[in-house]
Length: 373
Ligand SMILES: *Cc1c(COP(=O)(O)O)cnc(C)c1O
Image (spheres, rainbow, N blue to C red):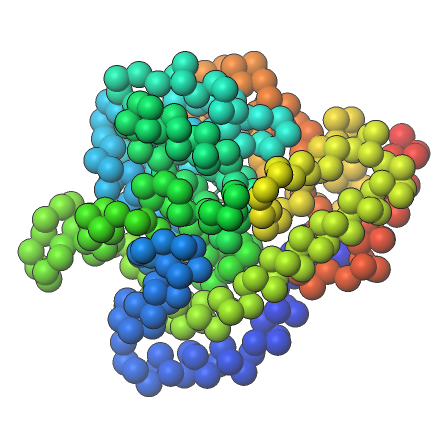
């Protein structure tokens, strides 16, 4: 039995007719950049994320960059963030000449360890940028308190967390700017690159709308030096077909996560393997189901590959140890929980269409590996 880490074929096949019709409509409209489809999608996304505004852009990476630009982050500023995330969480900061100031993660959630943040705030701190890793919100209410106490804005890297909640509040709704990605492997993925930002602040929204089109509000008149970072009409039209299914897909992922919990427990594997921690009063959307394997993680991954089971490591190198960030002066053991996570975590298949038989097969093979090592 083959169990890929992610299989988009089933989902896309079910929507083929609707997607083709949406593409044909854009073709006939003769408008390909921004336009009515993008505007309609933005309204639907704002509604979905419980925010006043949603602003489409070219990728999740650009969403982070645009958010930082909108808050005037530049040379000499500091942005507090996590070293355990996808690359662009940090490259967006350094690209503007600002300095990422890392805070280690909480080993249970893999998100920022709130207790370590205040000690890192200085005069130069221009923003705090938590990541909702794997689809679970960072402790936003605690972060909000810190943000208000020090008057430092929050930017959410919610690229993996569309629809995730803490106490009923959605990712992207509890900060100055929320940043999202439509990379195909996200819960709401496009058929190409794309992303968007959310905000409740009208002035910030206006600035973000301008920054994504070369900083202009009126064509050929430039208020800021912005980017060319627009969402195209084709992506928007396709995403509008997919958005109504997002909640049922995220619920299926959650159901699969619950199945795994039962299967791992029944197989007696919870000593050797730590299952993902779910915070109380939250909604985890399980963009990834990440187990912690303290012993022989890489060997297990290799064994699963031989059994045609997809598994991957998000992320094998902590960002403070990346070659391109050596100039920041960090070294080994500076963020021990982040480094330990990079050695121990393994994502296993969780996509919505995964069957119970496939999940049972994954557990059977993990058990076989554990018992023979
Ligand atoms: C996917 C992702 C991004 C970047 O999104 P792109 O659309 O690929 O540019 C940023 N941060 C995190 C945490 C992500 O998972």
